Image (cartoon, rainbow, N blue to C red):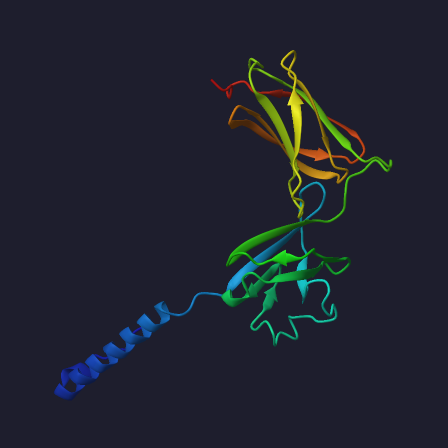
Length: 231
């Protein structure tokens, strides 16, 4: 809010004071506009196996394995500099890019510690799955099955599945039968929310989300592709 300079502007000296005051205000506004941006951040999101986000917050930042695991860089950050956390976000200087860290999170009941996370960019996101869906049987693989319909199933159709959340880089590929559109795809035993992608040639046709129960037969039924059939 600008000050009221009406009284001073009525005199010669006052007019000069007004100009000085306006110049000062202008410089202050310019300085505010040039304030440095916020530091870089890493958002660490925790989800339950159904894909519902959980209220975890960052409580510790530790060096990679092989170092002193007792060090918490949030309280002893002499080597990292200006690392801080608020809620599920870790703030760090740009100079920390390419470093690897392990993040501890808590919801007041459980404590999770991530695998090593490499800071690759100034705005980054990492997800963690807390808990798994499972039958209790000791099996190495889990099946997702179903059938696609609504299109002519001829040509090069394919199927891929991958966990929706969590630091899991594995993807799995399945076969779509040209006879009746049925498919089966074996995925790992990490039960939880998955992304299922059905495609033909060089493009995806349909993507859907599936809650996969580890060790079970997960039948998604008929996947209707009507209206999105590739040419």
